Amino acid sequence: MSFTVHVAQSDISFSCAAGTTILDAAKAAGYDMPYSCRTGICGSCKGRIVEGDVEAPASMEGISREERESGCTLFCQAKPVSDVQIAPRSISKLDPNAHKLVKAKVYRVTRAADDVSLLQLRFPAGTKIKFKAGQYLQVLLEDGARRSFSMANPPQQSDGVQLHIRHLAGGRFSSYLESGANAGDIVSLEMAFGDFYLREDSDKPIVFVASGTGFAPIKSILEDVFKRKLTTRSMVLYWGGRRSKDLYLSELAAQWAQSQPNFSFVPVLSEPEDGWTGRTGFVHHAVMQDLPSLLGHEIYACGVPAMINAARRDFVDKCGLPTDAFFCDAFVSTDTAVSG
Ligand SMILES: Cc1cc2nc3c(=O)[nH]c(=O)nc-3n(C[C@H](O)[C@H](O)[C@H](O)COP(=O)(O)OP(=O)(O)OC[C@H]3O[C@@H](n4cnc5c(N)ncnc54)[C@H](O)[C@@H]3O)c2cc1C
Ligand code: FES
Image (cartoon, rainbow, N blue to C red):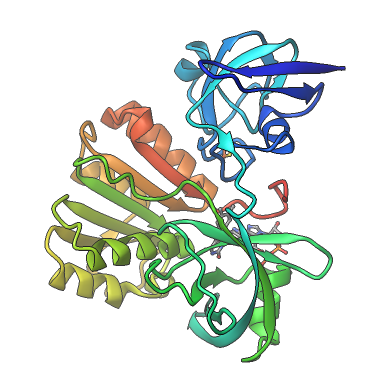
């Protein structure tokens, strides 16, 4: 059995088999809608059901109860149980050239912390690939499995990419880096994906919140902002880790705070070593202590799903942040995400 999905205020319709999510059906029909984690956490795929009914998990981190009650859903989770009319944030024909496959060469691997490697990849001579600061790529493993990593370099450096990769016990790609990556190795990639990029049509002050390697796409966004001198908005980065070594490029962030107008940096440790005189606790709590009202701000948060979920919930419920002013990428592990 299948249902028809019609996109409100457009002539777009596509078929969705029973048990298939609206996002998957849209992709299969050749349409591109916003998404990132595909696990109901990040909220990137949020939109409205204008007519008809869908089934979705009882609880989804990426959407509040109020939003669900007002007819919103997450299209990566929602499966029609009747013909439906939907209003996604955007929809367009999939551009066959939007994502490029490339065989990149390992140029350098450096260890930034016990459990973080910085991987520098170069594209073949003459190849440059466009992306937006904050987006991510997928590494294609030999058996076709994929792993997502965010570009840490700004888009002006388009002849290669820098990735910040956290080592996970038994992780397939991170173990390769830990044990065997050599300069000259070939890594197959597809890029670029994702909606975690700076909304430049706003002049609201920005709070960036990172945990661990969630710093990578924020570095890309900030370096792009600094290169293009988009520094009239006030910007602050809160970067959280357990110990100071987890903030593996904190000196770079501190240098930006010295040299860039309207930018400041707040490192936050949850398990500080002796002698640490900076902020302590959960990184999003430090934001709330400094900015009890977030009405009028935009948040760009990136890192582990637990931090993303707690930050969104507390910023909205306790600090008055409008739900549409929270942008995020949740670093969901491939075990829980759907590949493709
Ligand atoms: C849009 C997006 C962007 C991402 N960008 C980055 C990035 O820039 N840098 C980065 O480091 N990661 C990033 N991630 C997360 C990364 O894609 C996954 O962690 C991926 O699974 C790592 O691949 P792997 O081959 O190293 O490990 P896998 O072979 O996928 O194995 C992961 C294993 O680690 C376990 N695991 C998962 N989380 C943890 C944890 N917190 N502690 C211990 N074990 C755990 C899993 O259960 C699984 O067994 C991103 C994810 C998404 C969705
Ligand atoms: S919640 Fe649907 S893509 Fe993340």
